[in-house]
Image 1 (cartoon, rainbow, N blue to C red):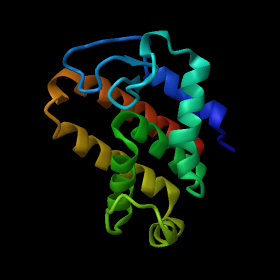
Image 2: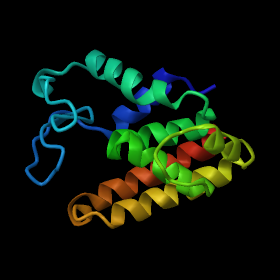
Image 3: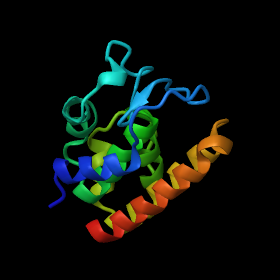
Image 4: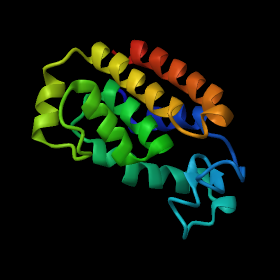
Length: 158
């Protein structure tokens, strides 16, 4: 079973140490935690343990009830693009209204689908989302590499 600790270790493989790239809309960032999303957090001095607590509370726990292989994909997407975007794109991938609220209609539809199909459709949604962003030219190669790694995880997890 894919647990939070494994998921967090994978995430750290995608997210780097401290950066403050003026082209990054998130601003100051460390371990994927951005100043834009967490204005009251001392990003430069953020510890791995503090980041792990934030991720568990704000990104992992809200995705309860989603099958583990898909949950990892949603978790990784939410960290990169925001929880509501991640949920909306998962809803789009499974063919329900993309309102950004994970409810019984979304859960029922997901449960009726093959997990491998969902992962492939979801990563496709993610790539389409990214390539439309104005920051694609700067960050696109890294995002594409992240998507490739997540497809490999999807094959392993399912």
